[in-house]
Length: 464
Image (cartoon, rainbow, N blue to C red; front, top):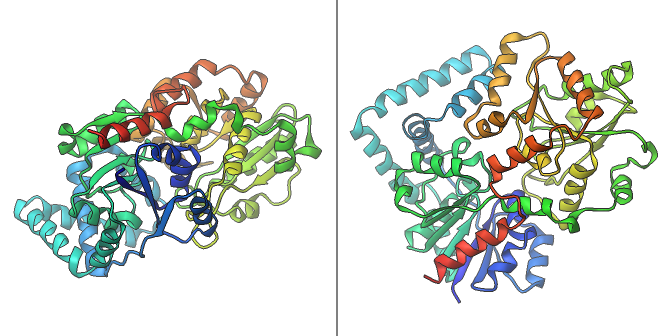
């Protein structure tokens, strides 16, 4: 059997590779060799107990001179290869939180580098310099020795854009290993940076992703790019991942507050939405004022790479809001185990709540799998310019297929948010068909067999 290196560098990778059962499926036709970029002791012990070979990847080290070259390559990538409106939309939105001088200095440096990149010889020299510094200003040689020690034949990654895997994947490619990737999420191709490795096989969620990949990386036109759907959505089509209603209420702390309808507010990360807690506060105040019918309960789910304290500081004490943490790392927020119980809790939360609110998040798609109304705030109170910038965030390239379905209700003011909440609570099944359109536009397949598709592509390539 061929030995296939399977990389894990993020908590979401665990959900995709381990909890879907993909790792077990791989075992039927190859020998998986797991490489994790941090010491997640409980996960490592679990996998080794199941007979899997697991290694911790040496920490990647990059000197400032190498990082500087990579920043310049990112400028080239964004301007001359990516050419996606998403980058400008997001940067324009985030610039409102940056003072004038740092923003100006960043733009001047960017314009200067763009000017130089119009000269072909400069771009050639830049990539030659990167290749030279890869060996001289990183621990690439150490990582390369690590790869040799594994005696692998192929590599499978779901995060080819991660800095934590960059040197490892480059070393594998340099040693002519077979390279396979299944892109973790539908926004990664247009939001994440340059992928330096050319893979032998690609897997993506939908046809939009396939076209994006072929536009941005022209060499993929001669490579197989398979639409396999989203493996991590398979949980949503399998009732075994649902807790009983009573067990779920006890876990979330809703037991003593039964009888009220439940709004799920799925928070975004502070790095993107520093002022987002104020929407939750407005909803709390509206419930207290009777502006939202039936005095519903709000279950707030904190983003896995956010801290719940920033929300509690804004909201304070409330009889309407239950705060719920998701999987979160202790040292690094993205470094945490995702257990089967975590999956069941998420599935149950999506299933047992009556409507869902989030800011242009993948959670819109997750919630649509459970046929629940989806609402997105698209305003900054009393700030028209900032409101326009936020609404544009919903029109990033990866999110356009969702918006075209008209299945996500946008609230452009506090009053409109409350009107839409009331409308959804009065008839939570009102958007069923739109939910199905959202799912089809993003994950393509809603049959719960996406993990099998990924495994079949990998198997087909390895046995050719």
